[in-house]
Structures are given as structure tokens and as C-alpha cells.
Length: 343
Image (tube, rainbow, N blue to C red):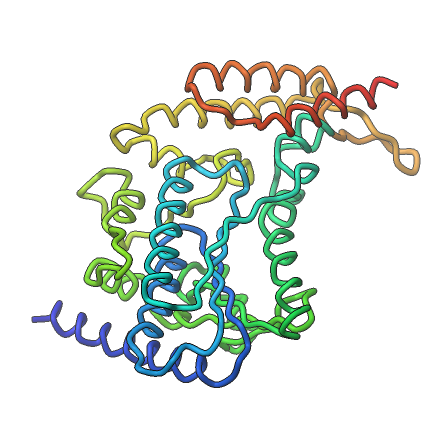
């Protein structure tokens, strides 16, 4: 009885979100950009928006761009799922005559993770030196949005952000008065809209698992990703966030570890081991370059010897898992940077 009441309440909240999306979408000609990460919240945002627009008798009056920022260090199960998801949406949109564009965007070669770490000696990221997010995700998205703004003067960026997602997120939203609207910092003409802000994690899972996407993908794959193949794991327990497999901001990579428990993806454990090696190398003073500033010394970037060792171990990893991690362009730029450093 209690579960049915909760489900009914969840459906009411979701219908309210759909009604709001419809009203805002048809209000003007401003194009929408949905930032899709492959996680549950961004997946729901994409699905609830597209389903709402597709079910209207009114003719869609503006483009919806769905962006996936591939950092080139995404966990393989996530990137594989994202590619299938976007491909199916594009095929469905074409068939239905909907103005939807899906795009996978990438960081520039000079901004890629291994180019900066192995080529220039950037330290594996920390809480205090988190150089990766802006270069790998934010810049590519901003560059895409800037092009849209040049044509349309403005755009609305939809994020799958929820107030109950985490305590840190909740504190930030509280400062803004829990508004679903906020400016896009550093991007004039863009504004952020968060349609599922007020939904709980239970609302999200109820929606995803009870509503099959009209383009034919299966949301139960998300259940597998979040449970790590453990059917006894509660989806509402939270605590897992999917990020790059090289992320050293967190002490332990629970994301890739959990994914490695999925049958067929056990080899991801080798990525976890390489990521742990990066941490070990970073934390040893002999692997760093001493810098001087105002008469005081401090440990700076990785020295060339440490970077070459990490490069060597990365090549061993590629051979072991039979997967290319470095592209030819990245490999070439790393060696060019080494040559410049020796001069």
C-alpha cells in the first residue's frame, strides 16, 4: 500500500515536470542544449524532454542539441552505452521528423589528459589542483554553445541536476534559493535550466525503469551500471558517481571498480591498477621537479623520468587489455613535448 502511494506521488511530480517542460519549450525560439553524461539523471533529463515534445500535437519549433563530452578517458562501458543511446535517438528523431541533433564532442589534443600529464608533467588531479574538468568537459561544451549563440544570440542549457543529489550540491543550490534557473558562468547568452531539480533518486529510478524510451534503448542497463552487476545492491543507496577512470581527486575509484564487477568487463580492474600507480608516482617526491618561488622551494610537476615510466606502463596496459588508450595524435604530441623539454 505504502509503495503504491509513493509511486503515485512520484508520477504526479513527473507529470508536473513534463507540463513545465512543454510550457517552456514552446515559449520562444531559443534552442536547447541538453548535457548528457550517461548517468541516471542526465538520461532521465534527455528522455523526459524528448518524450514530452514528441507526444505533443504541436509542431516542434526549435532545435534540441544533445551533447556528450567524451573526455577520451571515460570508462568503456559508459562510452559504449552513450554511443548506442545517441545513435538510437538520432535514428528515431529522423523517423519522427523531430529537430533533434546528437553530438559527441571531444577536448582538443593539447588539452587531453595524457598529453598534459605525460607530455607536460601535470600532476594527477587533486582536490586543490583539479585542472582536468575544465579542459576535458567544460571547454568543449562551451565552444559548442558559443557557436549556437553566434547564430541564435542565446540558448538554454539543460542539466540533470537534483537538489537531493548530494550535500555539497544542496548547499550550492541553497545559496541560489533552489532556483531551476541560473546563469551559465562565463558564457553570455546562455542560461541553465534544471527541470528535474526537485525530484528524488526514487523518482528518477521509478521513471527510468517504468518507461521504455521510444527510441528502443533499455534503461535496465543503467541498473546494471549502478549496481555493478549485484542484484542485491539498492539503487537508492547512492554514493556512486561515474567519472573518468583516471580520476585521482577521489581516494578510491569506486566507479571503475564497480563496473569491473559486471560480467565481460573484468579487465577494467587493470585500469584501476594503472590509476593507483599514477597516485603512487605523484606522491613520491623523487618523481617531482623542485620549483623556486620567492626564495622558497616546493614540489612541482612530474619529472621526465617519472612521465616516461608512466608512458611505458600505459603501453603495457594497452597491450594487456588489447585496447588503444592513446591516439596517434596524442602519442605524437607527447613525444614532441619531451623533445622541447630537452632543448
